[in-house]
Length: 193
Image 1 (cartoon, rainbow, N blue to C red):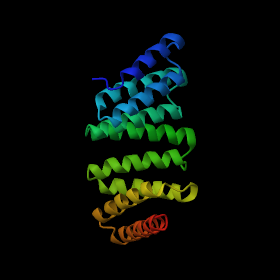
Image 2: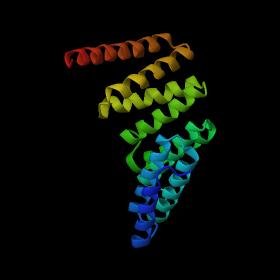
Image 3: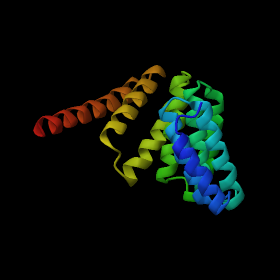
Image 4: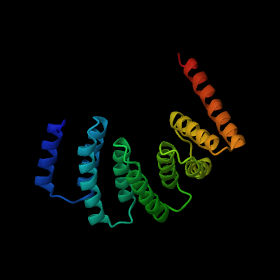
């Protein structure tokens, strides 16, 4: 059930010319896997992501940011297939690598925490999700700005998690931050039209 035969033929040619196993080859497999995710072909995407991870581990070792990225890609396919325990384990492994490689207060760690929090919201484990969102936003607040749409979605899930664990004051603060962002986005949109 391959939906990108031209791309796969090109991959086969690339493998013939350059051989298998390089990080560049793993990147091509990752990009191909992402195309299959977009087409909702999660099992096919998973096979490409697994091949990419195996190549990255062989070329770069297990404690490399590319391996963490590969694990996150595999976790996304697990989420799409509703295998939340598998996704949780994969995101946790990615988080551990990111903490080791980049440090505990880094942007990749914040993203891994947000990924874990999203899985915990889906599994209705709101206390864990609230703690993970809280740590992620703490890091993001010091390090960078998120894309407004991404930040809005994460804030809404963070607020939901806080409400579920009956931290109503925290939920209100986060909901107000989300509302403020929503108003800014609406004003920006109306100014551009």
